[in-house]
Amino acid sequence: MSFLNNPRGRSQRSRRANSDINMTPLIDVMLVLLIIFMVAAPLMTSGIALDLPKVGGKQLTGEDTSINISVDREGYFYIGKTEVPASDVVEKLKAIKSTNAELTVTISGDTSAEYGRVIGLMALLKEAGFEKVGLKTEAKPRSK
Image (cartoon, rainbow, N blue to C red):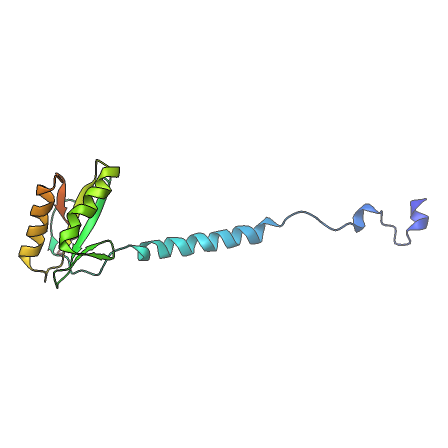
């Protein structure tokens, strides 16, 4: 009898809208966002541009919690991208160390920076009680 009421021969159920979510466009958008973040993440490193010395040696694994202090060619100190006066470097690091006792300090000194500024900073940190102080370098290019 429903055939008589519906001239095309379709039932009432087939005329309802499809309420399922199409997952293909959502997956495509997520994959594009993943690729964008994978490409952009290495570009978002914090710090200032330095010409680090190139030496051989093994690369650190990064397992330790470390904070980086940079010394640029003019002799200014930076924690991350923030310029810090020489008199305040130790105080700021002590405040950070109070929240993390295993804090290590890495000094990145530009190759054009005055040697005395880098070594003076290292001595200040040792006197202030920072036992783990290192110098950051770039890997030496391998010759073929």
